[in-house]
Image 1 (cartoon, helix red, strand yellow):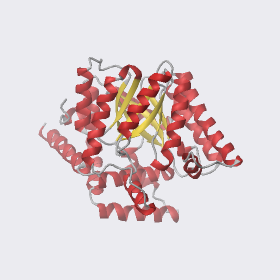
Image 2 (cartoon, helix red, strand yellow):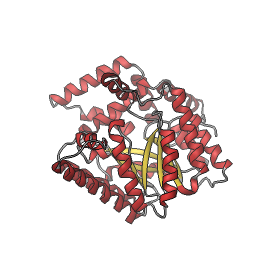
Image 3 (tube, helix red, strand yellow):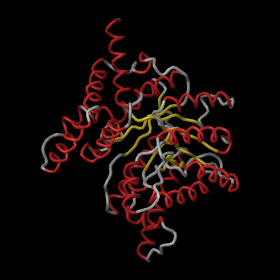
Image 4 (cartoon, helix red, strand yellow):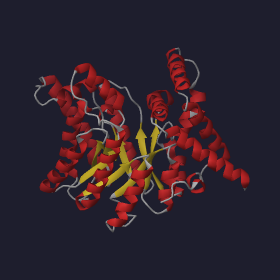
Length: 388
């Protein structure tokens, strides 16, 4: 695999698209500017200043597909022209009422119906905190703590919402990712995931759990889950990622005086991620994998493991995935070589997906080499086009 072929990577992008992305990543490359920009954005929202137009033409256009499912249609079609699927990700956060949780549940089910029979949309996805109160999950996470009658009823309602989503996935033959979250609510999510797999994954993986490999316990967890799934006669769906809550995890562990669940360094995270890939491919008959990664080495390793294990590149049990607006050099070059690839396509009202967008800005600022890599590839392609 050659991930440096910028002609393939940016073939779908106009010169204006390239320039917008270039200047956006250029700005994101300065942590001080990102910090000021975030403060100004929060100020503008608080005082209802008209900034949606600016956001929509810049960071929203780069990282989001639209404000509604139908708005994402053009993005979905454009990606599919190049053999890349769309994972519609309703990225509205911070809701707290049952009415909001029900609305989000219905929206997720709507993405499943949109994906039904549509080869351009291979998966659906949701976060449990999008349909549940965080504090409830935090209390239910600890098996030694007894929930009161009201809390038990509330938890049952959450499980019913999850079951409705997974049932819709099963009936429409659309696999569903249940995203990973903070470690102090992840155990209850893991338990619910398994209960859904036992119900819906008898023939194929419909329900997928997400493993964050920046946690030092996830490789051993994966080994146990594989064995449990074999004994329980169900398929285990895995979305494998490095993770998204590292600083928060370390800060909480330090403040509360417990051992951090986070790997000692990136080297250990990378090592466990790659070992997990090897383990999954060795047991693929009982598993399904979506490798969510922007890492070239892990992506290249997975292509080699597919060949080594004599698995067809088009085998739907194995997908690569990246976020819209990032790592196009990985996505498009993989798709060009006939591997299964999908992009996460976030959507939602602009003011309600801002927390997601600001995290993307933070991620590109904090992850070593992320922004410089994007800028380098964009510069190479801009120069290549000038020479034509």
